[in-house]
Length: 114
Image (cartoon, rainbow, N blue to C red; front, side, top):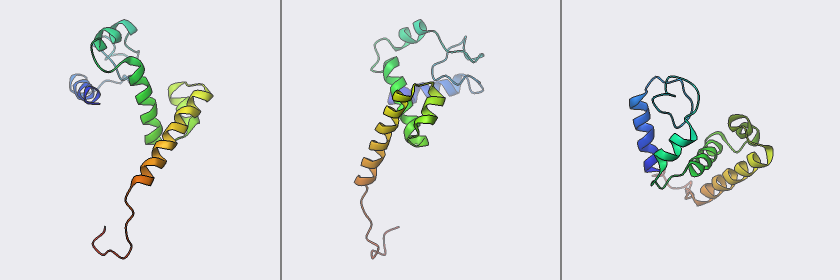
């Protein structure tokens, strides 16, 4: 996560007005809307904990958590087939349910509670 946060800060500083929606951009793609080449991406990630596959999976799951576990939305945004979109939506739903179960319950009689 630190690597991704650092990259996003660098990306915003280096290309603050880019219209390129892709996560990974470079000098050539910052002024366009096309994606960076697989070779450039692989070379940039060499030796890092992150891989292109892990970043892709993390981004799709993050979208499902942020926008709600809607497989149709995921299929549209990422061009996923229906089975893959449903798998991400199911994973997000399970994570959201687990997070809700782990939140401490507030005693309604406790006046100090928010």
